[in-house]
Length: 187
Image (cartoon, rainbow, N blue to C red; front, side):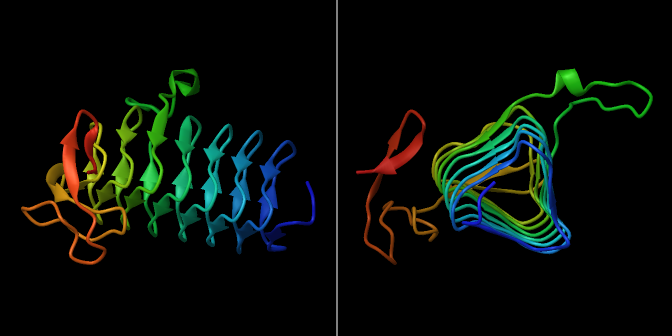
């Protein structure tokens, strides 16, 4: 490790963790072995990450988030307070199933709302927006707005986070979108 990042004295990073320049890790967090945290990330208090997790550049992980083995966050992902990733579909206390952990991918710029749950094995698309309290059980397309239990598509969002109207033009930044095979893209 180097001194180009900040880790609060009450937090702990296991041996083999790599933390990028400008990253900040706040109170009572634990980063487990073989985890990679990209530069300029902000990790809130009481966060558990890893082992074997990859966090991209500029991610913001709010308080009380759990990110388990098999999760990859691309750049600029937002994880709201107390949201959680699962890693095994059918856990039992008496049966060890960590070798059955399913990979989960959160693509660049996605936002995962407070108290949302992401079931293992799914992909959250670029700039998708998962509403607070949602339970995501299947893949989410690029720029999709999903919420509910289970989470269902409810519209589309711009890269800036504003909901798109029927004309697929953002009222905040004027970008125009069009449908594509991965969801939506800028036209």
